[in-house]
Image (cartoon, rainbow, N blue to C red; front, side, top):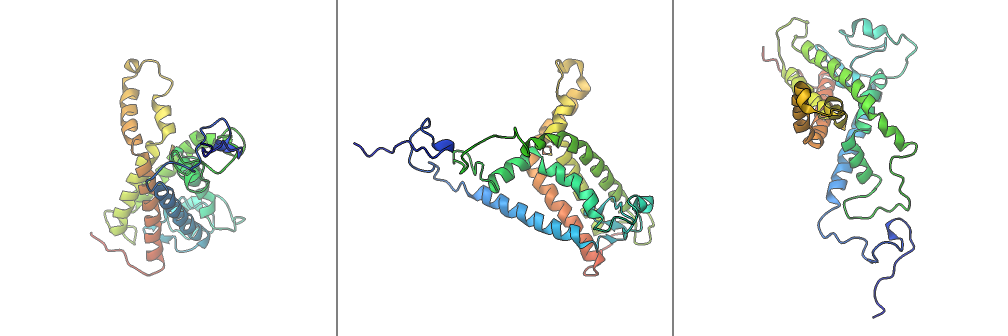
Length: 272
Ligand code: FES
């Protein structure tokens, strides 16, 4: 009829070798909702955590230390329980102590398989959704700098294990009162417990962790313990996205709670 759409030479998925479909995509559902909500959620966390990390104040209220500032390595730490760690970086470190430690959880989340999907879609539109073409002409995947650095994820996983260990220690310390006497609990203790449970669940559900535990084995029957652990991690792994979000919210919540206490806006309800 002469009215059929002609192949475009626009590049990307619009080259002449692809089906000549004029419509940008054929999806009729609200495909943009997921990337839009993801972008809003990630942006909110980035803004909040940037403010808190650079604020350099209100991160300790006995017996709680904010997870953003733990372990508090700089000499200028205002925490009572930082102990010898506080002197590790000496007095030359003049910016917020959170900046030293946040590199590790940040690197872990930034290179996480789920978060990669999330921000590739939400911010780079690469692609924005299944069956919706991306605007870019060329696609090189994660084969070149800087995206090839995403391969560092497996190493960040080990760092994340250490961070989870430190936050576990902080949760144990939260079973004290403001005078550091043991055997007490406040609302903060519950929040810290919830946060550490979600942090461990997210960390252990990592794809790298699943591979470290169960990968490169030829016969599961010869490694019954690893097989069982792999089965457990695999079940957690199925909820990796949910755990990524839940632990992101809980860590921000724990930090915000410490901020409220430290700034005097709220006092910790004690149960015993
Ligand atoms: Fe998400 Fe490793 S894949 S934390």
